[in-house]
Length: 63
Ligand code: SF4
Image (tube, rainbow, N blue to C red; front, side, top):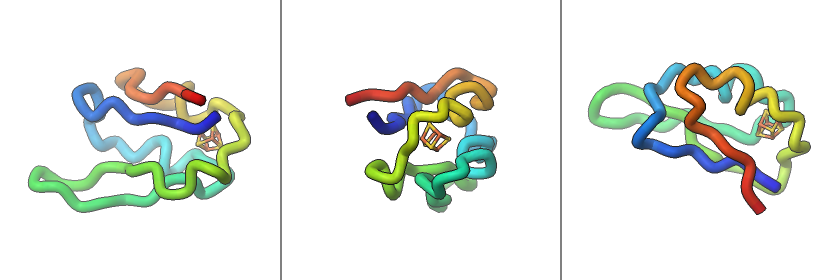
């Protein structure tokens, strides 16, 4: 499985980027600032630290 970000919920806290031990996320620039993006989904170990730490519950692990 790998993480999917719901950008309707994402507020760009970058918590997932900061917490992920497998370096799955990168940071990308947006008009309003920055947000995380899933750059290396195959590296996900399904530890769920990103889903647990997201302040707006914007991440789910999908197949
Ligand atoms: S579940 Fe764990 S390894 Fe996978 S993206 Fe989230 S923090 Fe990284």
